[in-house]
Image (cartoon, rainbow, N blue to C red; front, side, top):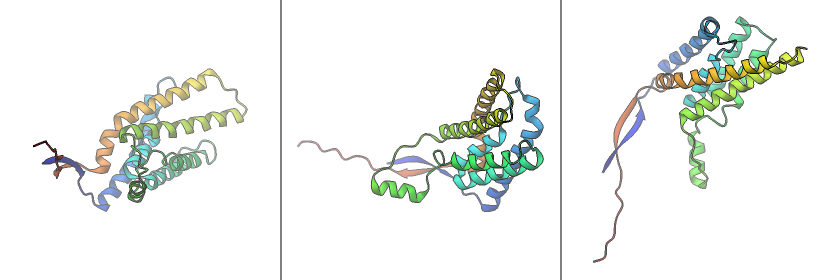
Length: 204
């Protein structure tokens, strides 16, 4: 008996690197050129964290961290705000938020199978949304903390703007994750896989 099995087409190192760099640059250009024009009452989506969340779940913790570091450097140099704030938040948040949401490595899966401690993971699209949400929430919390420590009183408008930014970021991330994951992982391949049928014993 055969059942369809889903696999990914092999992707070369050069293509993976080119796609990775293009996504990073695209996210940066969208954030500085397009996002300010689509603000809704001061709330703007955080495109870099959308890209970071998608890369983290699709390609693992290390690439997610490097994505955050690159975005931190770009935002720190080109769009300076509080000194070293972007560099610290983008790199550290992408690192720590990747642990609960990134795909497990082969060694981890083998160890869990050997110890019979493997647990079911959430679907990749759910983990992507949660990763984007956590990263964006960390950024907004730190941003509000800087405003408060700077001697400015926090108003209801600040919290509404932060909440709107989180909702805007998550909704846009939910729309973008499917095409971007397809670009990162390559097209799907369907192949037949042999599945053994259960043996049924009957009384003579």
